Length: 281
Ligand code: BTN
Image (cartoon, rainbow, N blue to C red; front, side, top):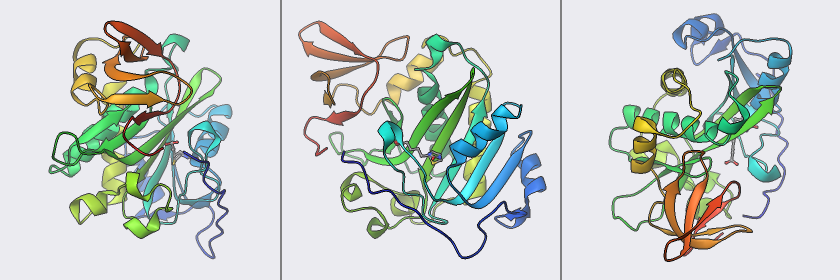
């Protein structure tokens, strides 16, 4: 995908830290969300940067920052992430330290937490994880194209990880840049009335707490089974940018994508962007 133009948005009001978020004082949200520290901003550069700043000051795991808008929200690969006011849940969470070899698994765990949350709040939706860091909605009809509803950006700060989660909540098709419009979707587009941001944040944080309560060093057991059942790429022909093209055969225990390039010839992909082979990049 071509890099999106960089957006700098300046709001006329509610730019700094907020005392209230979605009708409740921020201190009340801290309790509702069951996090040790919570900040809500009207507009911020990037919630990932703010959480990284707090982490460097010694903030505890599950410190969480949300913003109504981000002036320089970012996605993977140096791309910008459009974060218009009120349209999405723009949230970052400081995750407990995990060993280096588990780093590839962290975005997948976060993706599962988001997919579960979306289905818990919007039961008519089928949410899937698209390796390595997207949550997509798959319309009924097996070969239908998945559309991205959430992007995840995990960044290291020392031994900690900041998980940035951008969920498209209230956008209409015209709110998306033309170059991503056919591949993006919001919860409102999918179900008519999207869940409130606060309920979504609460659900995601609850799912993250339970997913991270056990070690995520290896992809095995129930976690592996659920990821396989939610794998948006499994069995589809895929093209990895700068990598192989073949049939996606799931994810191995380290979190690497397996691509079958010839009969029985599996390639492990550790990083990159993946497209369905018949989908425009
Ligand atoms: C991607 O799909 O490329 C990842 C997008 C991640 C966007 C979220 S929004 C909250 C957090 N703050 C950021 O600047 N980025 C992440």
